[in-house]
Length: 334
Image 1 (cartoon, rainbow, N blue to C red):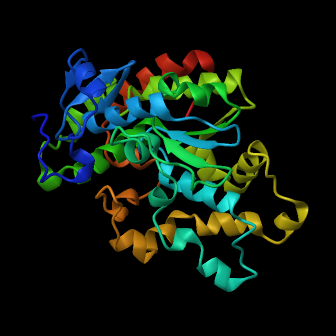
Image 2: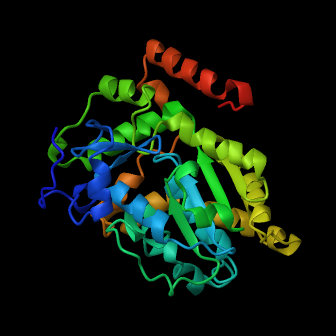
C-alpha cells in the first residue's frame, strides 16, 4: 500500500496541499501503512493519516479558543455522530420544539448530516493547512475533534472552554472502525481482513490511536478538571439517555427547567437524535459530506455489544487483557 496523493481518490484520502512544516516533519516521523490506502504517521504518540496530520499542525498553530467554546471529543467510531446531534439539539432547544411543528420540521438535523453541522478541527476546518475565518460562528461555538488531549491546541487547554468526551467499549469501537475504514477505501483498495485490523488495533496502531492512550488522556483530565472535562460512556448514554442528557446539560450550564422536563423536552431531544430517526432521514441515506464521505456510512448499527458477532474468544481475551492493563488501576470499566 503506497502513500499516494492520487487526485482520483476521494478528498478525504488525498494528501496534496501540505504545508512546508508538515512536509518537513514527515521526514522525521515513523510511518506505517494499514487502515487506509495512505500512510499513517506517529506524531506526539498518536497515529494520523497524512491529510489529518496537516490539519492537526495547522490547528495547533492557529486555533484560538474562546472561554465559551464547547468541544466534542472522541476516538473515531465511538458515538461521535450521535453526540454531535445531541449537542446541537440541546444547545438549540429554545429555537426548535414540538409545540411549533413548523420550527421542528425546520430543524437543521432534519436537513443536514451532523458532521456538516459540527465541524472537526483537523479534518474539516484546518485540514488544508490554512487559518479559516471563524467569525460567522455564533457563541457558544461548537467544535469537534479526534485530537488526543496531549496534542490539543494550547489555547483549548488554557481557556475555560468545555470539553465533552465520549468513549466506547474498545471491542465495539474496533468492529465499527473496521467496517468504516473498509467503506472509506475506494474499490476495497488496501482493505484489511478482520484479523489483520484487530492485530493493528491491539498493537496501538489505529486512526488517532492508540485507542487506550486516547481514552486515558481525557479520563485523567476529567478527574483533574471535572469543571472543564466531562467524560461520557456510549453504553451509559444508550442505557440511561435521559439521565445522561440532563447530566450533559448541567455540565454545559444550560440545565433543563422543571417546566421543560414536564413538557417532555428531554424525551423530544432523545427521540430526534435517535439512531432510528436520523438513519432513516433522506439526507443520511443519499447525501454526501463535502469531504466525499457518504452520509449513510456513519449509520451502520449503533448497537451495544455487536462485537460478539465478529470476535473470537481468543480475540476477546486479548483485547480484554489490554483493557484491564491500561484501565484497571483507574477503575475504568466497560
